[in-house]
Image (tube, rainbow, N blue to C red; front, top):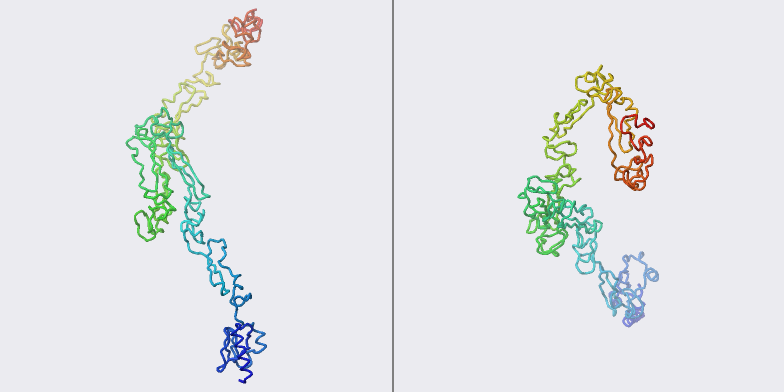
Length: 582
C-alpha cells in the first residue's frame, strides 16, 4: 500500500472515531491483514473491502459480486445510528430522546399486558404487548375458553353448558319444564326463566282451609274444607286422601338426599299426609349438599378431589363420566329429580311417589278412580260408578225381577252384566196382537187379541170402559173431537185411551202458576205477575172489579150462559155450549 492510500485510510478512521462513521458506505474502506479493522457495524469482505454487517459478499470470484459504485447503488447506506441527532436511524425507535415514551400507553384491554423495554437514552424504547390466555381470578380479564366457574372475571353465559354463578341450569333445555311436584297441598311457583338459565321452583305448603283446592291442610276438617275426607280411618284411600288407615301414613319425609328440602303436608288424622322434595340450588356451607354449579371455593360441602376416580366423602360418583345423566326411573307414578352435578361428583337421583289424583299425568295413584283421575281405568267392584258402568258394586245391579215395571204392555229385560257392572233395565212396547200376555196393544181388537175387551161398542159401559155411546155418558169420539175441553182456561185438559177400546179418559189439572197469555189468572196472581188477571185484584177477591168476558175470571154478573169461557157449565156436556139450556 502506497503512502497516499495509507494517509487516506488514516483520515477515514479518524473521522469514524470522531463522528461515529456517519457517511461510510459499502466498499469505501479497504481492509486486510496489514490494515486497520473496519469501522463498527462493518466487516471485512473476501474482496478486501469493508461491508456493512449482513451485506458481506458471498462470492469473490471476481465476476459475480458487484463492487465500487455499483455496490453503493444496490446496498443502502451503512452508518452507525446516533441517538440524539433527531434522525430515526436503523436500530432506533425514537429520536430525539425527548420524543421517546416514558411508559407504555394503556390500550384499555384488561386481557393485554404491555412490557416496557429499552430506554430514551439509547433511543430504542419499545412496548411489547402480550395477550392473557390463563384463567386467573380478579385480573379483570376473561380469556377465551374461560368461564365463570374457572375465572371470576367472566360473566355467566347462558347456553354454554356450564352452570355458573347465578344460574340454576344450563343449557336451557336442561331447565325444568314444569314446577309441579304432584302435591295438591303445596303452592308451586316458578322464578327466573330457561332463557336466562336461572329457572328455579318453589313449593310452599298450603296451611289455609279452602274449599275445592284439592288440599286438606293439617288441622282442617270436612266441616271447614270440602277437600277433607269425612271417612278417614275406613281403610280406603278416597278422594282427597293419600293414606288410610292413619297408621299407614308416613311419619317422616326424609328422602336421604342432602340436596333436597323435604316438606310434609297434611296430617295422619285427616289421612292426607304428603311429602314433597325441592332441590337445593344455593351454594351454602355446612349443609352437606353441593348443588349443581357449586365448587369447593363457593361451598365447603363440595369435594376438591372430584375426578380422582375415588368416591370420597360428599361424592356419589367418580370419575364424572360415571355419574348418571338422567334420573328417569320409567315409573309414571314418581316425580324424578336430579340434584348435584357430574362436575362436582355428587349427582343424586330422587323419586317421589305421586299420591294426588291428577288428570293427564299418566299415573293412577292408589285410591284414585276413573272418576277422579282420567289415567285410571274403570274398575268393577270398587263401589264407584265410573265411565262405562251403570252400577257398582255388582250386588247393586238390577235383575230381571227388579226390572219389572208392572205394565203388561211392555217386555222387561236386562242388558249388560252385573259381573262387569253394566247391567241396565230395558222396556220395549208390545205392538203385536195375539199372545195371552195381558196386553191389548193399540190397534188390536177382541177379534185379533184375546186380551182385548169383546164388549166395546155394545152401548154398555162395561168394567174397564169409560165410554160406549150411551145417552148418559159422552160419546168416546165426541170427547176425542173436543179434545176433552172443559172450557176452563185454568185447567190443563188431557186425553188418554182410545175410542177403539172404549177407554177414553179426560183429565183436568188445575193451573196454579202465574203465566202470561194462557187465559188464566190463578188464585194469588195479579196483573203484575200474570197479564191474564183483571185490574184491581185477583179472581174472587172483593176488589176484582166488574167481570169482563174473556178475562179468565168468572165474576158476577157473568154466568155460564153469558160467558161460558170464563164460567164453565156446572153439569152436562151440552150445558157448556153457548146458548144451550139458557
